[in-house]
Image (cartoon, rainbow, N blue to C red; front, side, top):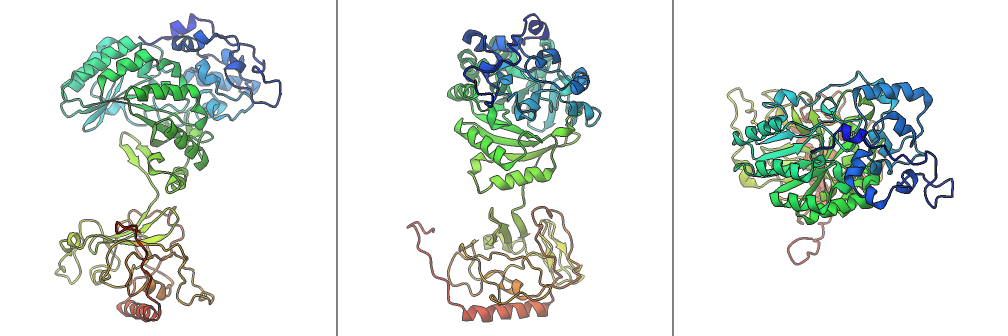
Length: 566
């Protein structure tokens, strides 16, 4: 059974001297953190006992003040916070806090701050609408084939940004409620995946947790069991051989852990994850983007690299939920996009989490990412892609897939609007010109011709900045077009560089280009808005591109590696 508050209160917390330096830290400038500083008199046997860790959690402001300095003017505000949402910090997790840093990223996650009281009335009690999708208490059935099963309401540590603050109390979930949850899954054949969460399921004794897992594994249509836990982060002593031996009997079983900062990747945490991995349990990490904790590219990159070394896959980076009292943790969405942009191309794809926002009111996880597909013309099978360096590339789909999609002219003389959502610029009489969903107004007109070029395939940058027409002379007055890196074709023999005709057409003032769904101003902040081209200007641009191509030497074929690739 989970250890409840009565068990914790029955044991006097071992606080240690409030201001004693750590062993061997005679230098007053050295950081004051670690077991030797906070708990110098605790034996190895006690420190390694997860039950001792749980019983001796810091749960009151008075006990916390014996370890950390609390400004007198904030004492009342912090007491008010604890009236709404309890505190619990294991001795192990407390030992990770740098006592001399009031903005320590570990401290901010678990210590009640005056900011929490300031935003006490801001936010939602149930921001994800979990209870509105609950057919049985403890079950949230939002997605068709999987459910959330909340089997516990207590944690080793209580995160100040927790989306389930409303349910956190110290007590065991009655067996009758657990049986009702299992029964719902058993009589709902559509459910093939269950996320066992809380609170923290790994707070249960090994025997009690096995009772629950064995009942779930006996359900024929249930394929996957996942456990969501922060125990490997905040109470790694709990991950012992007995627990691992039990868990590996119920495969396929996955565990989602919750590391937010590279300082949490301690040797103890590493050992806990290693034991789980050796038991055949895949580990995924679900981090939350938190202001003042991990809201920088450097911090998230260090976290992801450290997780990879521990054989933990960075899975999700969550936008902080708008839960009551957590407003000071929330960042703008642009910060999350900036972080993902800073990872893509600068580390392996396996180390990049998916940035998601849980839609308010129960809309589910919505992935959010920088825009790399700048333009997509499904009718002609053409796309403009942006890579991590900001270079633009033209890509062509297989011709066979496109021929079936060419729409017939409409009776009005215009063109049918295909189902993929192309938006006519000038209405029915625009001769079929349209802007693809997701395109940027004023985006390059590709190769400036109405038909795909003879050589189809992907285009790549040659690593050099191609000179625009008239290179070497100053740009024309009023020409505000951003410079673009124009790729050359993968195969030799193309009669004109990409975007040659587009660059040959001067920008026009007063554009009436249509804004379309999918435009991202944050990513495309350098785009130039252009007016739709006339047939005469397009033909002039094509002719100019051809004349310049005739004067340019043909690109040299690049050597291959023996497999037909470069």
